[in-house]
Image (cartoon, rainbow, N blue to C red; front, top):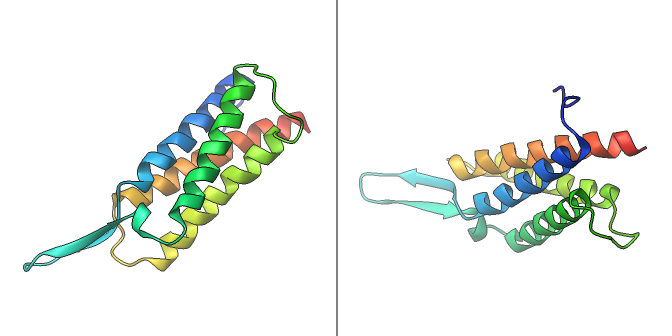
Length: 129
């Protein structure tokens, strides 16, 4: 993936937006089965520790957006921390991808958005090292 044409701020805002889209995907269908009698469906918020992934993604998005918009951040809340938090959302999506049967579109979207956010965040982090 060639991200060389994007500015640092565009990468940061892209990572922030991807994290917000990950949060939205938590509320979509992640698992389900359609049967003639009825069926069932579960969203990401019906799974264990969904709220931890929500908080992590929102915190990472806030750090990325604040840095891109040039807000003063505490020294502990740097791009490295936000990149690590974003990678946790990717890990969370991958765990549920392998754990669930009858996967639905919400889980695939969560995986795509968390991977995009991680790629953008890692690109910025590598530039700063």
